[in-house]
Length: 350
Image 1 (cartoon, rainbow, N blue to C red):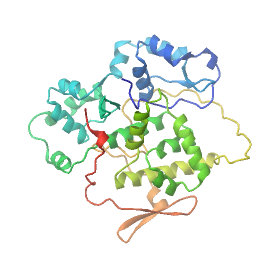
Image 2 (image 1 turned 45 degrees about the vertical axis):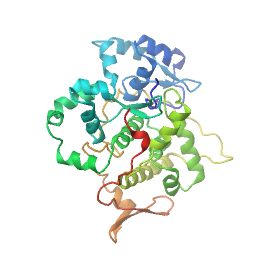
Image 3 (image 1 turned 180 degrees about the horizontal axis):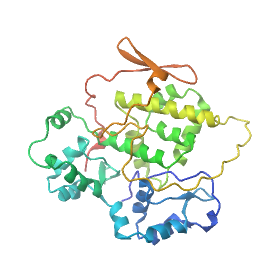
Image 4 (image 1 turned 90 degrees about the vertical axis):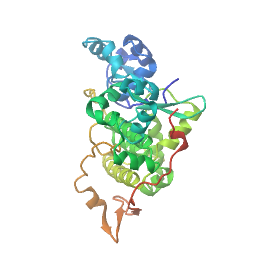
């Protein structure tokens, strides 16, 4: 069954020089000995770099294929890098029960890399096998005995951090695969629901551009209607602190995008496309700290210097933000105590 979120951005929105010498994604996956879903995941993780062809479809340079095939351990090492496991196989890898594995994932000890829908249309989370094995080496005490108090408190409160950690990871990877400021803003905008987005971006032409780029910025096969519905439900932030973080991040990305060029309006002349950048070095499979809200259970990156001071101030026991460009006040509710216990029914593990 195809994965619903093994997507990544291409390196450029325009065809680079020599694109006629590239090969299609399907041929590249065959030459690398990967299934198409595995190839999509390799692109998402930065293990395989793609460029956009004249028709907008992803293509791969032969030099990239040669480089990967020349690596020691090919093709097994590449396959192992993108190998995924579900709850049952992950529990076998750790030699624990499936119930304990699910508790570890729900409490943020493991971050899903993707999901699919089973025949009952229930979300089934999957994980990188390498990261599951790393957990056993990093925190063996979590695999035996009683769960630590912090984990029991979180689970007793009804929290499930898998959706939050998954979307943080997804946004992190998509940001790592593009340097176009408007595409970056569109990626961050995925983490806000329409009401929150309209409050941050009050210009309808900017919202239209973000909506257009949101669909163009991803790579991979288009999911089913049911898959798109679940994606739309899982992507928006649902906790006050996460919503606040994404609003702040989107304002910062919008500032950078507006400095590059404004959003197009009716009657504007077509803007010349910039030259395509040279491919960057492959990114690590595990995201590094960035402006994206980190997964719960991981170490948080440092707060952006001066960002909160520029956007707002603390007053009367709550945080108020001021939108940088248009002056519209944005009130953000201070997170109170623990997160609410609301869970998405689609976030259950099959």
